[in-house]
Length: 460
Image 1 (cartoon, rainbow, N blue to C red):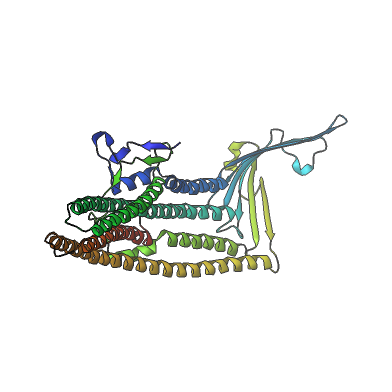
Image 2 (cartoon, helix red, strand yellow; image 1 turned 45 degrees about the vertical axis):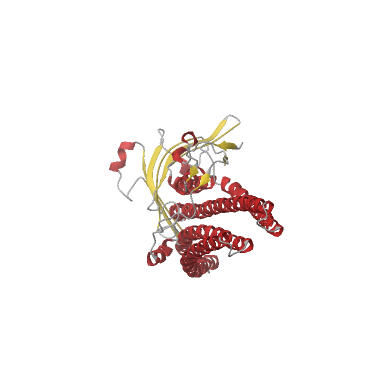
């Protein structure tokens, strides 16, 4: 449900004290704090943390229990019970402990254990595949890389929101100033029309001057209405960036206005420093993290070329206190060695080659992305500086048109000019003032685009 925008926290607008201006700084603070996209950006970091937690689950200790029993025609064939604990480690060694209780008249002899059961404590070690990296360790390291990539993705989302919301604010501010300028032009035209009409009645001006004055009222009214339509559109678009703490969209009241788009603003930047920022640009970091994740996959696929060589060793005792008394590889142990390897290794070599090709593909993509980001930043810097120069030129142009209008008015008052020339001067000035407002907004938006191109935004 949309609500009327009355009071914003953080001092955005305080109508209770008659302060109705929505400043740019408070506006972007509000957008960063409550816009759904900003909250989505924060949630992306949670994705990485939850993925990391899930991958760490591959190293969680695991309890297990097995029961296998058979009884037929009053004969207890066998009753096999086993319970244990398996502890995977980051070193690739799997520790385990278990207890067996097996009984039965037809029990397989190798399954026979003492009456009180048999305890075992040992480990499984991979000496081939899985010695340096295995599926669990690869998944964990990729999850750690993913955590960092979600942080970069969050920054990129926020940077784009900063640029879009900034552009929306200054467009709104320029449209508001244009309405103010055109309202002043309409008021001036109406006052002049009344003056000319009164002078015509008194016989000082010809009838054609009243037509000239009236057409100016109609033309400026039309231009004002067009500007009001544009201001309404920009206000509605600005509203899409304003949400409250309850995740509800809010609307600006008609009495709320922006700061003057022509007011000075600090543009603090250094071109060389901004070019250095490119190497930490979120988009480039995301590609770097992709390459890092692919490199982990390549190491894992390379490890798959090794043969499977797994050694299992367990101490066997009837009582837990006997573990320290059991000699290694002399008595009371269970030992197993597993070995296997494909002869041609075609699947393994194909997977490794594919992993390397993916890294090469992504590396070329990174090089191209770096070039594009650098070119975009240079273009945005050039655009900002050019617009800044245009603004200075057009400011002088507006000042010159104001002087021409004052001079034309003085000539008109002493009868050396005509109403047509005065109106022409005013039209030129009004048009120049609206263009100046648009340029001022364009410059401030260009600054935000330049920051975005360098990978900066709300938090920089």
